[in-house]
Length: 198
Image: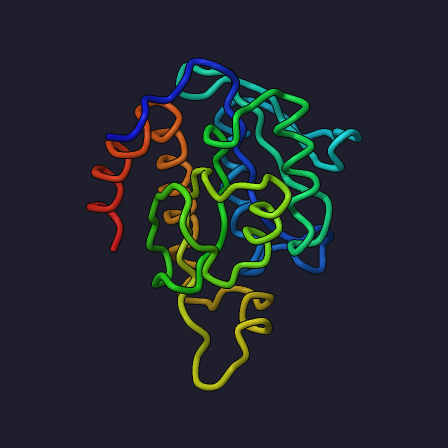
């Protein structure tokens, strides 16, 4: 039985790389999820110097929520995330991280707590900086690279034309799943969204 979500401040971090050159790439889909959540909360992002992140504060799922996009490159996400966890006094187990996932088909959404990082450098950095893997993840499937394309190149490419037609729906679903995590906790959210997606 997973613990019920607390009533305290929730922290939802989207992973990506900063700068216009990386916008709309597969690796930045975590940014897309938190940007949509900010829109839903009527909140705007601004620089939070203490954590080197952009943050937006509002209410979602009946809770105060801090939405964040680290301003470091993906493989250094841990420093900003640990800074946010400390600054807003959010226990690591209440942290939600939205990220791209090569091990899931495009648009498949999966929720989990802890476990391995699947070779994801952003998650690896966060786990190292927090000293624990016991945080919540919204995994957004981006599929495997075609043919012999290197995974490191694949994640930095933009979505294909056919994927772009489905992207808005998939990001919407991932944002819904993040809200369900905040409101209902892990198991009820898994039961609902794993059936909906892939």
